[in-house]
Every structure is written in structure tokens, then in C-alpha cells.
Length: 448
Image (cartoon, rainbow, N blue to C red; front, side, top):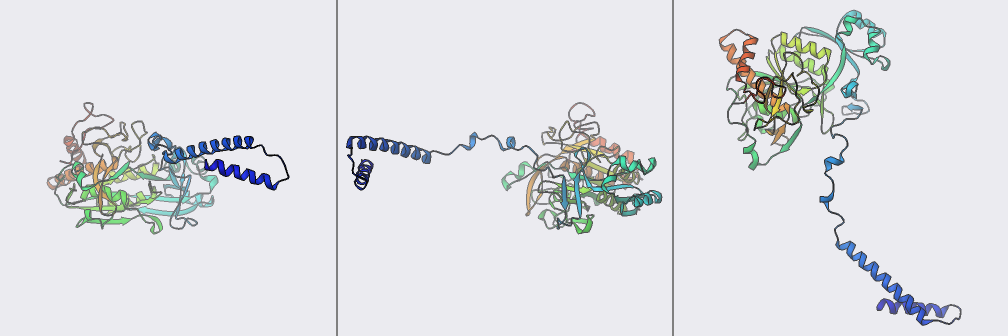
């Protein structure tokens, strides 16, 4: 009613200041009534809009359904180092969606090939003899026009090409990590028993370890970085793997409480979700392990088949090393990954505490053993503990079992590789289909 009165008064006033005319009040009243009804409808709609929730979150599709690319997916070219305008290295995508150092290759060294490459405009990054491995390798960077196997094959001999490959980049093999509170710790602790209480040494090629974490109080860790130009290595993955081997808290029981852990730092940060290790860093790490007489080496990493990596792994094994590698976390239909896929490397898949296969664990004829790798309690940032899942967490269980068997064997016998591997087989628990299978391999290795 107030709106009607005000509107009518306004219209009458307007009629008085315009040129003289006859005012039809009935028409004005009808117009005011129409305006009043329209205003009321608008007021009601506005009130309903304010009082109603804009939308229900439960009606939205899951966020996973909205993500079209993996959060860990990297750009085609990734600058690595603190100064992105002058990077320490360029991490690029190459054939088959693998990654490598841009335009960089490695080959068994010989003076003739080196001179040919220099003449073609290649930059020689290093020509080095690795005493532990008994190999001499040449690492070089080529111009863009030579950056394929086919282009290099036009200039290098067949024998040289048989040992040439890219300086590929390899990835860690954890799939997920979850923080846990103290009330849920009991459900994640696999056992309160050691694998063995023996003084021994074991190696791991991984990222750095947070030595200040409470899980490593009193731990015996011998660490060395193999990253170029003082590039820093992240702590997350290496700390988690190391804590399975030697971590010790009220809730966390180490597999090897009296072990000296040799930690070779090879991983650099690619993104918040991924870490990379160059083949050249891995070669230096393996050589160091052999020079330090470390006989069991855990490699919780995976990547492409590579001629140089295969030569290096074979050389390490021929020198007496046992290499245990994560089988990969790309799923049951994924292709073989390396170094796990090489002959004589012990490839490890993962299962949960009910001995069910980990859903993301790779499968195939190259799987040798399996171990607990789901919701494994491990060291996490900021002095916390958390659950980690992946074949990365299963591999150290097999590494620990193997180094304990090796130490026991060497106490009473001369070194015999076949006997040690036979003892490991005797320790395995047959899981899944009877006998060796592509899911659990020869069987599961339990920490107790």
C-alpha cells in the first residue's frame, strides 16, 4: 500500500510540472497496481534466492572424474635447478613417453668413437672409468640434428651402437602416502619382530634421508649424493624406504636394527608429485656401492629398458652384488619396467596385510617375489609417521631378508650365490596360484 501511495503521488506531481493536460486517475491506479505486483514478485524471488543454498556439493561429480590428466604428469621440457633460466639439466620427454636428459647419451667409451663425436659437434660431458664396475663410459650431448638412434647410427660403428643409449630418467615407485594419527598406528605395524639382529651393511639407491627424523635416532647411515652441481635431493621417498629397513620408534620396528645403511642420493625434485634420477647418477651410485663392498642393493625405482643400464647391472651382479628392485606401480596390464625386468635382478611386487595383490602393482613373468607394500608404516615429514603404499615399500622387505641370509651364509661358508638364492626361495610363502605366478612370483617374503 505504501508503494502504491508513493508511486501515485510521484506520478501526480510529475503531471503538475509538465504541460497542462487532463489526468485519468483510474488509469494511473491500474498502472500503480501493476507495478506493485511486479515489485512484490521480484521481492519474493530475491528472498527465496537468499534463503536457498546455491547448490549441493553432494550433487557434484567426484573430483577424480573431473581430472583428465595425472597430477604427476610433467611438461614436455622441465628445467631442473634453482635458476630456471640457467638450469643444471633439462628433463625432457622422449620416445614412448619416457624421460631423459635433453640430447644426452651414454656409450661404452673408445677413443675412435669419441673423436667422431667431437667432429660432429658433440660436447663430451665425461669420459670415466668406473673401478667398481670395471667399465669405462662416455657421456656426451649432441646437437638436435643428431638426437636419435638413427642419426647417430650413420656415423658410429655397429659395435658402438650396440652399447649406446640415452641418459634416461627413472622414477620412484610409491603410489600414495597418508598421514596417520596415534590411534591408527597399531593397524599399520606389520610386526614387532626384526628380520635379523645381525651387524651387517645394506645399500639403497634412492632420494636423501632426513637424518634428523626421530625414526633415525642412533641409526648408522653412510650417505653420499650423486646429483650434479650440488643439486639437492628431496627427503620423502628415501626416508620412507630407509625407515622400513632401519627406522626405530615406539610404533615402528626396523627390519635390520643393527645395519649400516649406505644411502646413495640420486633423485631430484621434478614436481610436488614426482622425483627423477638420471641414469648417469645411478651408474655412479652403483659403482660406489661396489667400492664400499655393499653386497645387497635396494633400488625402489623404475623406468625404461636401457642398453647401458643393462650393462651396468650385469657388471654389478658379476662382481657379486645382489640387486633388488621394485616391480613398478603402473597396474596389472603395464609393460615390464627396469631394472626389475633384467635377468638376475630380484623384482618385487606388493600385497596387503591380507595377502591380496596391490591393485597398482605390475605383473609379469619377471616378478620374482612379493612382500607387504600396502599401508606400510614409515617416516614422513615433520617428525611424523604415515602409511605408504607401492612396490617401493615391498622391495626393502626382500632386500632385508636377502642380506640376513647372506650374512648367515658367509658366517659358515665361502660365498655361493646360488645357495643364498636357494635359501631365499625356501623362505618364500606360496601365494595365489600354486607355484610361480606373474602376481606374487615365487612367493611372498614375510618379515617374521
